[in-house]
Amino acid sequence: MLKLLIPIIDRHGAREAARHGAFLFAERCVSEVEIVEVLDDPAYDRSVAFHSIGALRRREKQAMQDALLQTRAILDDAGVPYTWTRVFGPPERVIASSVERGRADIVVLDASGLGFLRKWSVLARLRRLMHTPVTLVQ
Image (cartoon, rainbow, N blue to C red; front, side):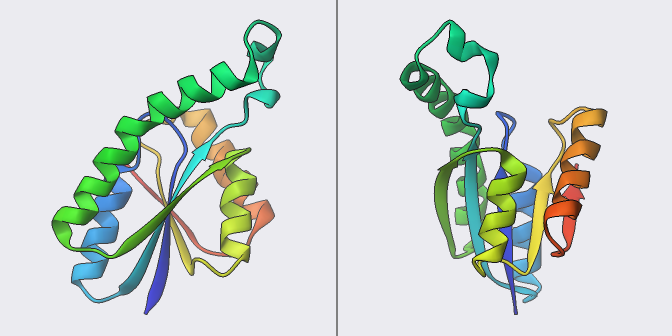
């Protein structure tokens, strides 16, 4: 049985990835699901020149809360056992470090809210950082 990692990397959440994970659980392909809520560290953005890091982190957490609740609701409705964590940092590095710690055999990334260039740059960075299969769903 596989361990599945579903990262939430933007405000659009990971609804499609959660639906795919629920399907794989129903088909008995997946035994565990790990949700990683990735909050991009504001220190990497230019907005720290105008706002405090604490205020930026609070704003980011509030924006991501709805996405996390929707993702968790889909898994709850399907009866999928899951755990979730919240991590600050660059999305690709956080995902790669979660996989390295043995949390996942496959990564399912919801790319429906990402633009064309962002989608392919995230995928290219993930391929450079890890050898675990990544599935983009839309």
